Image (cartoon, rainbow, N blue to C red; front, top):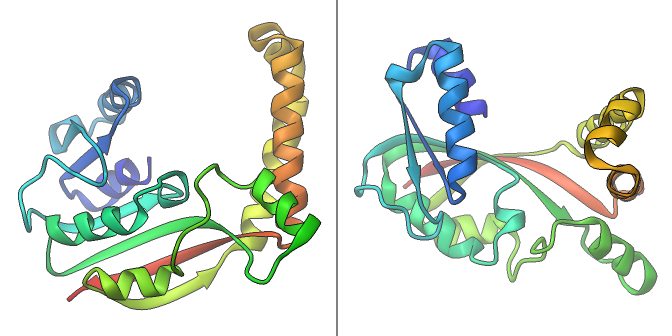
Length: 199
């Protein structure tokens, strides 16, 4: 969780929000292990309907969340509600490259997160939900490199992973990583990092 790193480095207070209780439990355990649990609270909730007061946050960070949600615009609007005026948001997101059709589009859809496609480009959604886009970075090359590292890491530990997951699950996982890597290298899917200010 990047938020736990920010808390450790800056001393800020952190609210971690997620839907599955299992993820929040692991986050709490990690906060205790890192010695930052006094500054961390976990909240179970939907990103499009957060159980948080209006203007209660000063900064928001989320990593590859919107590409896994159907309610992208609603989530950005909800982020704007819970942050104070002038608050900053940084997030990464995976998207399907524009202008694809036929087989290349199908390959991108198969490699991308399930709800990757959106009705509007992210800069337009940000503007429509009360945000000013300050910066947009293309980090697709870094994304592809991280996928290559994941493939290599799992390959180097495959004996243990096969014992833990079973052969079929291990091979399915490797095939999925390879599919994503191939799509990123061909730039059928892209990853961008956005920085925005609440206005």
